[in-house]
Structure formats: C-alpha cells, structure tokens
Amino acid sequence: LIMGGALLWGAATLLTHYVYVNGDLFEAAGPAHLASDLGLLALLVGLILAVARRLARQVPHRAEDGAVLGLGLGLALIAWFAEGLFIRLADPPWAESAFLSGLVAKALKDGSPDLARSLYAWTWQLLHAGFIALLAWLPLTKLRHLVAAPVAVYAGNLEPPARWEALDLEDEAAPLGIGEAADLTWKSRLDADACTRCGRCTAACPAQRAGQGLDPYTVLMAAAPDASGQSLAERAGGEAIWACTACLACETVCPVSAEPLRIIAGLRRQQVLATGQFPPHLQEVCRGLERQGNPWALAADLRLPLDAPTLAPGDQTDVLLWVGCAGAYDPEAHAATEALVRILRAAGVDFATLGEDERCCGDAARRIGSEDLWQSLARENIAALQARRFRRIVTLCPHGYNTLAHEYPQLGGEFAVRHATSFVAELLAQGRLRLRPASGEPVAVAYQDPCTLGRGPDAAAPARALLAALPGVRLAELSPAGREALCCGGGGGQAWMERPAGQRVNALRAQDVAESGAALCATACPYCQQMLRESLADLPQPIPARDVIALVA
Image (tube, rainbow, N blue to C red; front, side, top):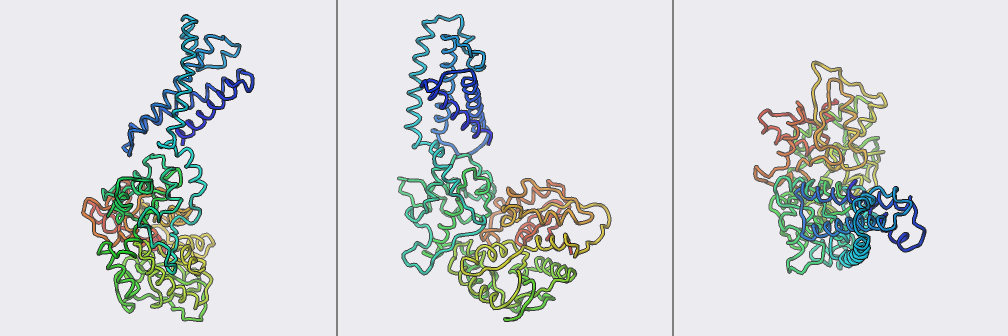
C-alpha cells in the first residue's frame, strides 16, 4: 500500500508539475517546485521499495518487470537531474524551496555553464523520449494494470465472498462451465490485465504452500490472450485445479479484486458436467450425495440419535436447527450438535429439526463442480423448509450457513440464517445463558477461523467473543488469523481427497497451532475440526480439537 501510494502520488505530482509549470500554464513559484521535489522523493522511495520487494520475495516475475522498474527509475533520476540543472542555470528566487533538486544544483555550481546548458537540453530530450516509450510500452507490460486495476476494483464482487454464481441449466446455448477462452467472463479477462503480479495470491494459497501445484496467479493468467496452443485448462494448471480448497485466501489478499476462484469453478464445472472426468474420490462423494443425500452414502436411518424434536410439515417453531451432514453422521461433530441442543434448551429457545427430511445442503457438490446435483439437493431442501414455519435457521456448519443464507436465494429459497456462534453469542449477551465457572489454571486455546466465516466482515467476531467470555480460557491467536487465516485444507471437496504426507494443508495448520503454545484448538466448523483432529493427533505432543459451541455448553 505504501509502495503503490508513493508511486502513484509521486508520478502524478511530477507529471502535473511538468505539464503546468514547464508548459507555462502558470508561473513557477516555490510551492510548485517544493511539491515537485516531494513528488520526486515519493516516486524514488516507491521505486526503491518495488526493487527491494522484488529481490526479497520469491514471487513470479518476468524480465519485462525489471525493465519497467529500470525505465521508471531512470526517468525519475533524469527528472531530478534536469530540475537541478535548471536551478544551476537560472538561480531562481525559489531555489531554496527545491530541497532535493537543489542538491544537484549545488553539486554543479562550479561547473561550466555551457556544459550545464547542453546537458539540460539533452536531459529534456531523454525525458520526452523515455515518457513516449513508456506510454507506447504500457499496454504490453504489467503497467496496463494502471488502467485496468481501477476498473477491476470498481467491478469487484460485492456479494458475500463465498457465494458462487448459479448456472442456468435449462439454457441449452449457455456453456456448462469454462471449456475455452470464449466461455470466460469479461471480468476474468479484465482481471488478467489488472493483475499487478505482486505474488500475494501465490503466497496465500494453502495448496501452493503445501506443494500441491496450484497457483492462483497461473489460473488468473490463463485468461490472458495466448498463442501457445495449450488449452485454457492446461494453462491454468491442469489437474492442479482439483487441489483448490475454495478458501478465498487468494481473493482476500488481492489488491485489485481479482477472482481466480471464478475461473477454477468454471473449469471444474466444465469437467464434471461436460466430460465427467474428475477425481475418483470426488465422484464417490457425488454418488453418495445423489443416492443417500450425504457425501458418505449412509442411509438416513443411520443418522446419530439427537434428543431434539422433529418439525413436521405444517408445524411451527422459532428456530429450525440445521444439523448438517457432519453433525448427523460424524461422532465428534455430533457432540457439538448435542451441545447446541443443550444450550438452546437452557436458554428457553423453541426449536426443532427436519430429522430424516434434511439432506445435504449441497455445498460439496457445488464446490466440486456438480452444479446439477447441487440444484437438485437445494430444491429438495427448499421444498422441505418451505413446508414448515419458523423464524430462522441456526446451524453449526459454516458451509451450510453460506449455502442456505447466500446460495439458496438463487433458487427462490429465502430464509433468515444464523451461524451457531453468532446466535449463541447473542443469547449470552442477552443474559439467557450462564457459563460454568473455571476450574484450575487458565487454558490457552487457539482458534481456527473457518474460511467461509472468517473471510466475511466481522464474521470471526462471535466465536472470539464466546471464547473471551469463557472462564479459564486464554485465546492464543494463530498466525495468520482472521480474514487471512490459513485454511484447514478441507474445503472445495478436499476433505475427501487423499494427499501424500508432505502435501497436506492441515499438517501446515497443525504446526501453526503447535507454535502458538495452545493446549487446545477450537473452531466453529465440523470439517475444520475433522481435518485438524487428524493432523493435531500426529504432532509429537498431540493437541485436541473441539468446537467452540461444545466448550460453551
């Protein structure tokens, strides 16, 4: 931000100065030349920071990047020299105001005036030639982001970050995904031009950090014009797109609001819907969702028993508790669901569940790319929900929360949805809950931000508020945390993928937990809990993983 601001302000100030002052549009005065020197200083600082960042960070670069920096630095130095020569020759009354250019003038004060005049003429010729070259070169280099980036930011996604666009499956003329360049949206093409090649997305990507071959920058650049003969999918990384956890880290850190996940989603949809060629483990997940309504293909009568009333069609309640797949079939996640039931009862909340009428929300199907399956599951659930009367839905699963709150409206399912941490934090603030007193020494608890919650505005606050309110708990923040937290590695269908030992994202996050000094890892997502439970158990000193709601109950 500092680097970009210095470059922009410095270049704009210098350009304004040379157009207005040297073009005789207003009379030269001390303040104008002081502003010019300040702009020159800002530009030099920005360029030096850019060079230092290029040398310090291992991010993708092209040879032209160095040439662009070199040309910019050269023009800045020539401008500095030219202004100093002018002061040396004219000795204007405002010379003391030009603190930076005055240094050059003082260094040349004993030189030949004729030589200074000759150099002054040549420096202006060089400045003109260099500026014209820069303008001509701009569309062919990364400098085009100076024009494209503001448009990309203006056109950036204002919807909830984890919400995916729906496909119109009834339109036979519409593409099923992204199979070729013609299927790209104008925003994806613009993003390729707006990219500053800063490398933030590459550094933030959990799959990249785990060595799985995915690079959001490569995905983004696949949308740029190309004459290599490779398909768009090959340019985007080929099979590496199946390593994406859909965590949104790349889009969260992007300074120009680029959306590489939009391209990955389109490529996955194309492979699933048009060719049927996608990883076998994910095919099994889709078959389970299609046959039994859950990713493990378990029968509805195998749902773990829950001491909660079932809401029949036509009946009414205040809160409809959405259990979710993990809460229904995974014992650890089920324990958190039971804890939430106890909390709701203690707070006097009227609630019920759908029971066996609840099918998977479809999040996994959509992130895998099976849009038709997602729409089928969504329509079944919407029909079941609309047959009941309730004020709001509360769920422990961030994936279910995002799907029900932000994606079901695409198919006409408008519901008020709350994540359990937000709802329970509200009950606590209203004085409807009493927490157990602490026993023993304070326990350091690390909190893993679920991506679907943590990337949103203030969505990470309720869970932290609950942990802060728990007696005997001391929050040990992980690094990174909040909006830039590292994914657990389970999103985007990865919870069902097999990865070699050295390429597991959850192992990276487990190391972060260990380094925090925490004795317990809390989270607000059943899949985060599952992924971290596995990796934390492999540490030399295993650390348990619990749901925040289970700690509150």
